[in-house]
Image 1: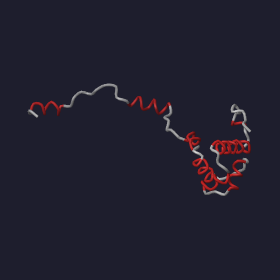
Image 2: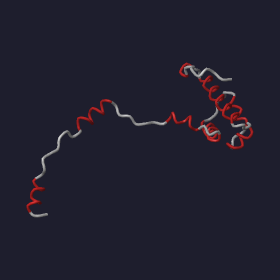
Image 3: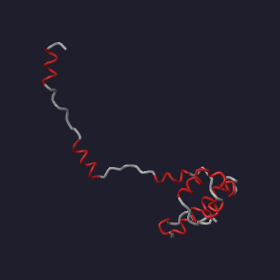
Image 4: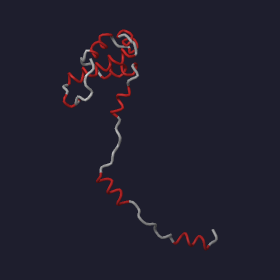
Length: 117
């Protein structure tokens, strides 16, 4: 069963989210023409774990990761990438510290030129 993709995920219950994940796993498995038994064997999990996830039941993340890996669906985890962002306040502070002008040459540099270096 394919649900409307416009459903606001924030409004879904935990159970509904588990069912959505299970539906995704089932769809990927069937697209690749893989049986539950084959998927279980390739992931070193029990078939009952595959059945649970596809039925929207709770499984561990340690079980979900190999399932996604075997189905070439680890890309769904890219959402969890964390990029370090600087706050506007910190950016402002860094901008103030930025050098705006060149300083005068030190006297040591001119002495070296007089010595022929």
